[in-house]
Image 1 (cartoon, rainbow, N blue to C red):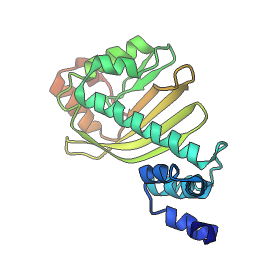
Image 2 (tube, rainbow, N blue to C red):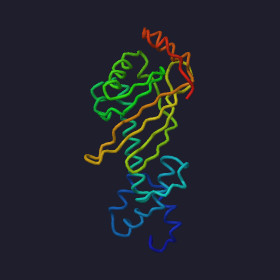
Image 3 (tube, one colour):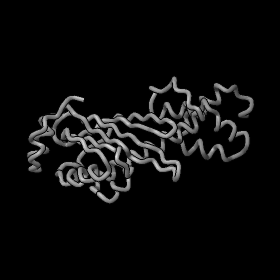
Image 4 (cartoon, rainbow, N blue to C red):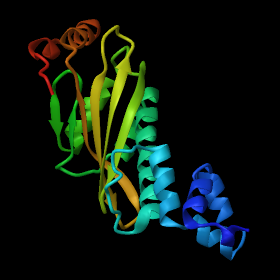
Length: 213
């Protein structure tokens, strides 16, 4: 019986469950709900699904809430790159916060401030031939009360190393929506960046020398 197991064994047993299974377990009965809501079980699941780097973090609302917030940001970030692959300017416009303090740093080295300028930059970026040819790996996420940032590496099919990418999101409590406020795409790939500019005949890119991040 579950109630006869010591907490450490219970937590270890629950660590084999994935997120949907742990949620379903909590809805079976009061005993399972108590076990499935145990903070150590959610901490173990967080470490398994996301990263070991935040083992010393003490989430103010517990590991279950922190796991849910992190999972939400990971999904939001995946949606961001789905929009990039589909080159949907309309969807990208809805994804960004409409404010003058948003910023976007593209892989060419150019930076844009303010909603309108950022949208203009994406309109140009979506004309690049290989903008959709990439893979996202090594995703790391950190969530605070109303801010979150995601670091990752983007591997682009242009025969060079990865881009270092950071997206920062802001939570708006009115509707619970996470909005992009900063997107930064950095690289040591000067030659690759020059190829992007040359292939797409963007004259102003030729004047930009990409810098180390």
